[in-house]
Image (cartoon, rainbow over all chains, first blue to last red; front, side, top):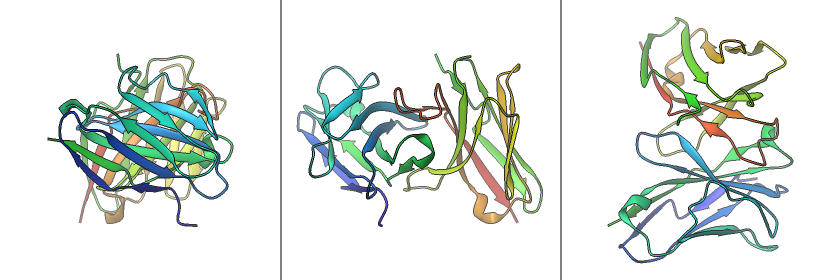
Length: 113
Length: 115
């Protein structure tokens, strides 16, 4: 089990482009969480998904950001029309049932130029 | 408004001594607390947790203390080792699953263990 896999590790986008971040949870985990870490900040919760369902998206900006976790395939965090302020490290975590099995991936570092 | 605060951005400790990392919170609804360790270019790794019904939890060299009345928790590492050098994040949740609204993280403390 390779753990939580995120790709790409680094992503560079020009302002206005779309960014797609992928997260494959640990085998058997059906709970996925996305967090964002801005420079010099802690991680901020964005969205919590279970297979095919968004459970809580209270931490996600209302515009330009969307997330999905389809029945087959990885969870996708999509950022449309990226701006410089979107530059951050985006971490995905997965869990079997709840918090104790919360395992983070290595993150995707998005740079908007 | 920061609900979880780690007021020391960095801490330097000599190898073999005790490292004490502190964390304060403001939300009285938090009832589950965790510490994560993070190396550069890696994701956070879970270290230890504590439920609000306890005031201490120990795992090897790591002990977490919770003072609910003061809304304060601390992580003790003893003895400190060079491999402990990392950023430590304190996190809190309003439920042991942390699922419904995720975890609330502090900004982290960079622990440096000096030989």
